[in-house]
Length: 400
Image (cartoon, rainbow, N blue to C red):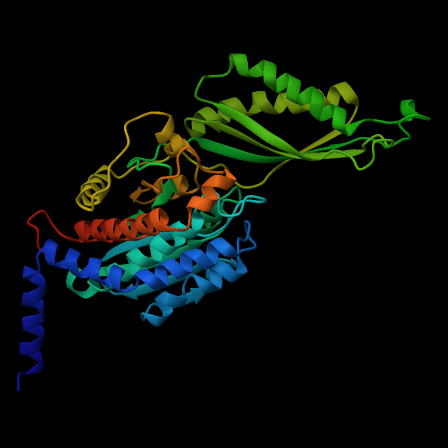
């Protein structure tokens, strides 16, 4: 019987000579063994959408498969009720997979976060299968409230992602695009307070909060001519009165301002806010502007990891779309940009064959389950797992 020292020596020798191709094949098989469970997870999330900071069922469901696979699960991670951390292995290279699972109000999973969560779980299972040989610690971060709530920013400020060697996720889109180029964005809640009155009998006694939004939106429309072409200003009025014969005394809305960088956003945002101030000044309303989260940052791509992902996706038969309208989802803002400012990160987009439907349309939500979605889920999970292997393997091509 071999001595423990001899057994340990042989294991070390095996690790020192394990080629990346062998590790990748092991990771692929691990993902494919769980294909039905991963598809089922995606479909359950899709059928039961929960919006930002309300993802209680999703935060409990997503880590279940990881728990059964031996991951250590920390629910309510960093005192955030709908966040979690799942961890496996003890190797020196820490790979983080980000699972998003919040849905859009009124549109459900029309941005495909059900697929993001399932592909992150799949990639983690693939990496767990090679964690010892590749020298990995695999971490899955359940990240709530990406759709405007800044969940990852809250997590960063509480210490998440510290020391991670590579953070990754893959996002569904109409077509495959490797590089994320999102705008920086701020999210604001706008509130006007006026005074109600009978609209016919005593109109002079009223101060119309809905009119304040009308003035502000006209000012914004005129301002756009003087804004840089890359900026975006858009929003919705969420409440502007309850009865047509009562002058609205309160009106509320949500507005986004986007720019190429946080620095450009800081210069642009005061100009936009003056349009809302104009609405208050013209109508006599009181104005309150409240940030919904801290601004989302532009993305800083780890070029080496992106090159690995691109090669891995091509090896799986994926095809990257040329620049153009169909590929523009890579300009969408994300709080993953803030993560990328702190640790190396990639955020590729994977196509689900939805055209002409695009993200944030009901028709796109319908494409986030079914045949093309299932293929994208598994391809995305495998490509991320292979990229994690590449991160752990030196240029010589063997794990250490």
